[in-house]
Image (tube, rainbow, N blue to C red; front, side, top):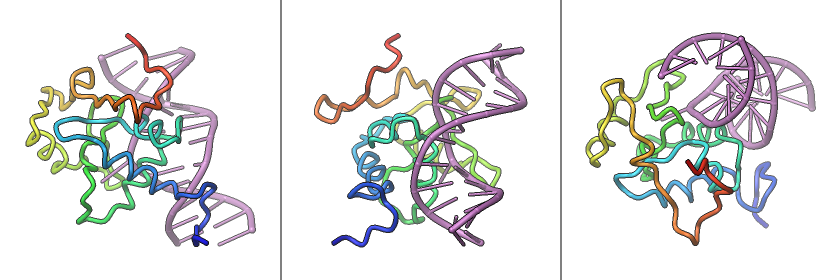
Length: 124
DNA sequence: GGATTGACGGGAG
DNA sequence: ACTCCCGCCAATC
């Protein structure tokens, strides 16, 4: 039996989030809320942020591709935004606005039909 | 084991 | 378009 800490499900919440994160292709970004939805935690974007916060420094996960719904790099508890995150994204070809915002309309990752779990995004 | 926090989102003003 | 408030749930102390 798995020594699941206090995970309600068979897989820990973090694991689900990390699994989704791994699918985010290079040059694309996703919002916390979107990751939460894809991870089966629809409506709990904070859990995503918490999971990312627990990531080790040398993680292989593309954590930098996760930004908030405003299209900006989230401010850490540190009080400052991760500058490296922006650099990593720009390095992948993602352009930032003069105000430091990314065009979600343009870079938001759209998962394949197979992994599609999104209920119905604001279909513009 | 209870209380607080936290890489957010959405609505309301 | 921006700011403030509340809520959700897990992890931490």
